Length: 298
Image (cartoon, rainbow, N blue to C red; front, side, top):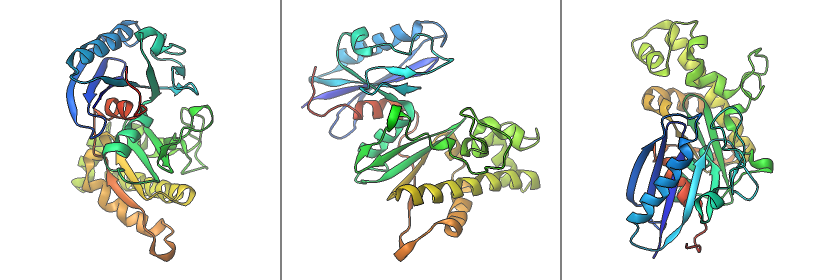
C-alpha cells in the first residue's frame, strides 16, 4: 500500500492532492494561494503544499508529481521552457528544491494522465485529449503511454491549423489554429466585438441570435475538422474533451456530432468515441500523481 502526492502549479494558486495511486481516490486536497505569479511566492507555496500533504499521509508516499505550464526537460525533473510567466520556473530542479524525488510534466499532459489512469480514457491504449478553455491544449496517449515527443512538445493540438489561409497567427505563429478558432481568448475578435466570452456567445446561440449562431457553429465546425484530422493521424479509440468551454454541454456536443458525421473517415464502420472529461479543476494535480512510477516510494 502507498499514497501519492500531485501538485498543480498555477500563477495565483497551487492545488494539491493526496491520492490512492491504485484507484485515483482523493484522500486529501488543498489549495494554497500564491498572490503573485511574477514573484517567488509560488515556489514556497509548492513546498508548503507538499509538506502539508505529507503530514496527511497514512501510508508510504510513492512520490510527488508536479504539473506546470511549459515544456519539461527530457528527464522530467524541471520545466525547460516557459517564457514570460512564473519567473524562476525555467530550469528549477524540483527534486533538489523539495529534497525528494519529483516528476514534472506539462499541465495539459497531466490532464491527459488523469483521464488515462482514472477517467474517460481508462482502459484505452490509444486516445487523445483536447482542453478547450482560454486557449486549447492537448495530449496524446499512444500504446498506453503519454507521448511527449522530441523536446516534450507533442500534444500541442490546439496549434494545428484548421484555416491555412488565415492571416491571424497564434502564439506559436501557426495561422488559423484550432485555438484561434474556438478558444475563449478570441471570442471578441471572432464576433466583431459583440460577445466577450464563450459563455455570452453560447447564450446568444441558444437565444437564436444569428451572429452568435454563425460564430459558434463555425467554431464547432473547425473543432470537428480538427478531430477528424487527428483521428486520421493517430487513430484514437477515444477523444476526450475537457476545459471550461465544455460547460456548453449539448450546445457544443450536438452540432459537433453532426459535423463529425460529415467529416470523419470510417472504414469498416470504425467510429471515434467522443467523451467529456471526467475530471475538471483537479485534473492537473491528479494527473501529476498518476505520472509517478508505480514502484517508487520515498
